[in-house]
Length: 273
Image 1 (cartoon, rainbow, N blue to C red):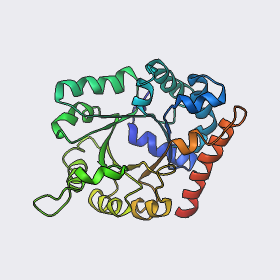
Image 2 (image 1 turned 30 degrees about the horizontal axis):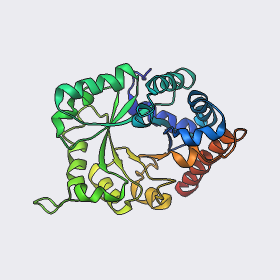
Image 3 (image 1 turned 60 degrees about the vertical axis):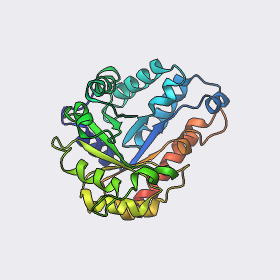
């Protein structure tokens, strides 16, 4: 399961080994998978095998499985990754957030039931609701900060009394008060490069999970310019649909997914160089 040295160490090791900042999201869409003539489990395993040497993490999206009553398949693909590719961490994208007693159950679900190396969480109920996740020192806690969706500013950009924005306060809390175990990351969408620069200025070298590369149209060049740390790391670039469904036929879907993943990985490396 999770490396005893902790999620962030495991993530950094995978980035070095595969020379990759790419995280492939596993978001099953039955209508698209059907055209490949395979089962959900076969599809997921094929994608993992095709891309495992191109990524630093895999990120199954919980709701995409739960809506299909496919929790068994979710458990199976996490187990498969841990068994076949134990050096690649698994981020469960669940965006959990609730009062303490319920948060304890969500933490147990992510880390004990599914064996995820990290989980995404919603901080907008306050820091006390994150404690059941944060206290798991060997696991990653990835806090929503400035999300990639167009309407995120309705809440996250609200101005506070000191003139700063709400997402900036989340970044401050995450990098200081909440990060006592050094196991916190933040989610910042590639669709908001200026806000990404602001978050980086607040959190220093804290790693950031960056959704929005690929189908959502995030700018890779600007993301790297504003988000990289001085040593050329600090980012996990998440792509899902643009990789998973790059192919259009049963005989080539895995190969096309690999090529799409490799293209993102190499583009990032070229820009960093």
